[in-house]
Length: 179
Image (cartoon, rainbow, N blue to C red; front, side, top):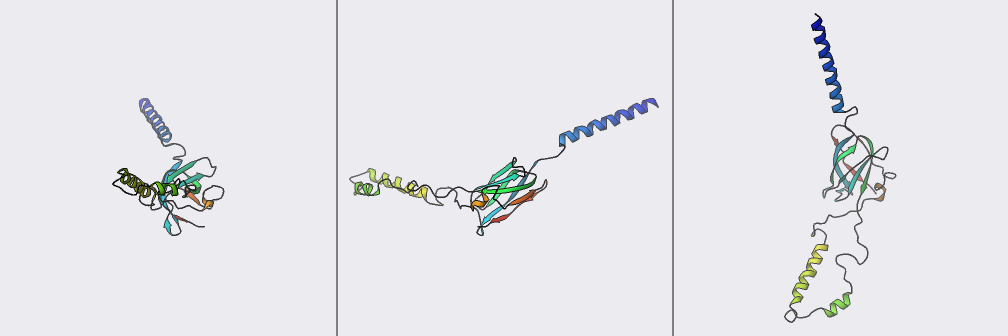
């Protein structure tokens, strides 16, 4: 009878240790981040580029992801709970005269340009180089992402009207930006 009580106490102790180990492995509060997917639209179309940020209520936890060509995004580690959302796009215009199609001194270059390809065999190579420069700078031809500037109010956590509560389960948040 004494051995039965000892065996029962051992099993109870083993069960408590197992329960304690399982709770440590899972964590007291569970996961602190979750995956969020969705689509960002602006003026009825998917925003073609940019970064989306999910910022926790204290402003210290940040989850971010890249916006794809079709406006879709995935944030792998958005903080659980209520978040402010910012959308940041890059300026689409290079500084004046610094774009890929700019010429340093166009009049001088035109005057000095070779007129006859037979007399100037390098002219064909130069023309091909210039055409490549034009193609590389043309939207849709270079592989660069198209940039559509989002309204500035979405850039900052202080001014963005976007909020979303991230849950432990599946999170899908589609939204449209307005001017």
